[in-house]
Amino acid sequence: MASPYPDGEREKVASKLPSALRQELKVRAAELRIDIQDAVTDGINAWRANTTAPSPVDTTGADSFSTWLPAGLYDAFKADCTDRKVSYTQGLAQSIRGWLDAHDSPGARPETGFPQRKIICNQKGGVGKTSVAAGVAEAYAEAGKRVLLVDYDPQGHLSEQLGIPQIAPGHDSLVAHMCAEGKGDLRDLLVTIEGERFGKRLHVLPACFDGFLLDARIATNTRIRHRETTLERALEPLEDDFDVIVVDCPPSLGIAMDAAIYYGRRRPNEQAGVSGVIIPVLAEDSSATAYAMLADQIGSLCDDLELDLDYLGLVVNLYDSRRGYVATSSLNEWKKLGEPPVLAVIGDLKEQREAVRKRRALLDYAPLSDQAEAMRQIASATS
Image (cartoon, rainbow, N blue to C red; front, side, top):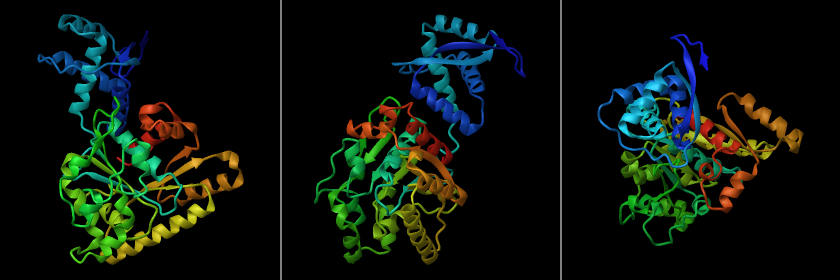
């Protein structure tokens, strides 16, 4: 079957591709504003021209994949696969992997040399900060970025939901390093989240029970100067290892929140809208009050320290229109703000709760769910 195309006839071809690779291709093509069919064409042409055998790609669980290619290209590609003694699925996977490696994400690593920093915050509990932080971090990793997900909340919900034990009091931890009492390398504490979609690119720094005393320990430690810089000083040694650092904040307006806000500020030579705060909210009046309180704290800290902090956007979480006028009118109010924009509206659906019960990452447990797509939408909008 052929289809007219500006540069000549194209034919629809069907093959197979690992779902994680297909999603990474989709995201990268969107970031670069390139048609997927053009990306696949370029990848196949480069693969055919490459005389060095590329590294094999894991194609376990490959699903059906179709696109449009210039007439005759797929037949030539299949002939090359036969000559190189690789399956068509493996050849296509190598072609797309090569294209992705040759076309970096524009937001994967800023020219400044430090990672993007996404601060997921709201002092109101129950708005879904943890699920948004985890889901967005998973989406970044799925798209090929190296991601550090920091459980900064002493309640440890994020660690618990992913089946990771909290760090016991008195042991080396993020809290210890923030209080200038670290004994080792924080890298030794990181836990890698398994899953084909993440490719060992997603790592978690677990929560610590000592975090409940963090504000008091920082406030009374005479060795700590500029207490708002404590989170940055603790995480800075890890920054070279990651493209994105996502911080799941506690429901607090204390010193810990000041340190998170400072960490998410726009650094010298950093492009606007790259790092900053993502604020999960609910479609109800109390959430609007909490948002106003957080905005006041951010404004005061930025004025006091002359910081630039970008509001990357709002996420209206756990939305259910069946709750009636309060929910629908509140959603409209959030959208009418304009700035910060509403990045996504996430329904109150079962998949997130099931993933939590099974101690699995949402994008690994239910990659095709509406909630998973919303996380990808947020990640794409904030890359």
